[in-house]
Length: 306
Length: 227
Image 1 (cartoon, each protein chain N blue to C red):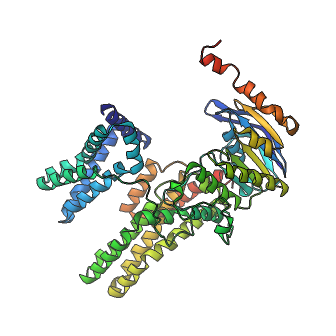
Image 2 (spheres, each protein chain N blue to C red):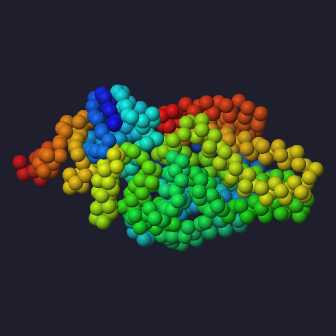
Image 3 (cartoon, rainbow over the protein chains, first blue to last red):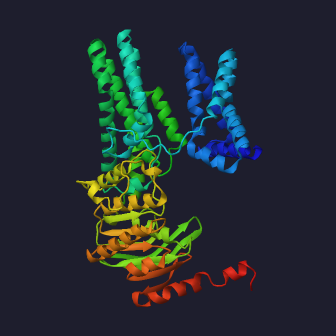
């Protein structure tokens, strides 16, 4: 078991190094960001405990992946496997537990740890053959696969819109539209296998325009109920609504262009930083978008033989 | 026709392809054989335009890749995409309108199931179906018979023969000699990134024993200390 955790530690270190950070800086940065965001969460809402709990579950969900656990079962005996799964869930949850203790949420931190131990008792089947229907099955894969992974978040977003109208809180409504934007944004964060780009008989520019067009169209379709509801309920704030909607368009275009600007490699550190800065200072997008576009065209030219 | 002249490829300082000259004609099938790491897949990636290289690859087409169906040794599938959507995705990328996918499902694949849950052979058949429906003129099939059942093996062999009749070019790599002998007009032997032998159809009968002699040699005896 010791060797297993040593290997996990090595893998984590390699991910940080691959991201382009020295190990020490990587760990310091991760700790800093975690504390900053956790503090922000606890300052902003009284439900922070629950959100924090959900986040930690989301964080350990990768450890519950059926294929991964089938592999572990094949190399460890039943007892060792059980011990190992409990230990790794607890280890992965240490940052969340420590922060809850720091916030004097003793009962909640105990409940959280009990729950993550209970999760290890369940076997998730690898043979679930249920195909989730999607309205996006005809066009490139991002929305097809993305929708199937995040479909349950859309009713949440629409429900938030409903609440925002009920309590007459426009900002909450804007948040629900941004949530749709963030979900769509996540569909483009991972780089696909180069085969799926190579297959296109389009020029690099046509390819990029096609990707952006599809993304913006589907984002519009998904956020349309929210936009209509907010426009009717908060017609005085329609200019703000349009501004945020246009910003969503800009950020979605940015993530697509950023992805292909380092293709077929994953997005690098400098691109991540540029996007992060643009979130704080949106006018930067005027420079970033053309920059990513020209980089993307260069990268795609080699794959599309343009 | 595809003409390859003086093709070389380096990964860092390691040379993986060395001055390869080849010619692939319309209506013919070509086999590429060689041990693992001989450079077959790299050669295919260079022809497809997925790798930069030294030397030239020319064809009758303005952009060869737009007329090329590439079957990879291990096709990649997204985690939540059905077989039908995979076929549609590859057809869309070439602006091909598919009227009915069911009629073209010659391998009887469960098209409404997620492709990532398919067995190795089923994945290969799905990837093959998808590139067949792209209406390509040239096909590069990297290990098309790997993991595929005997019935599908026969179907693939028939498809290759039909493609030759239709004037298409097929380039295949396989470790199963019988399938290559059944379908190919010429077979090239690769070793350490070089084409070391060209075998014409008339000499196919001797190919297997020659390959055995060439690749196996006395390695097994060495391993078992029988020398």
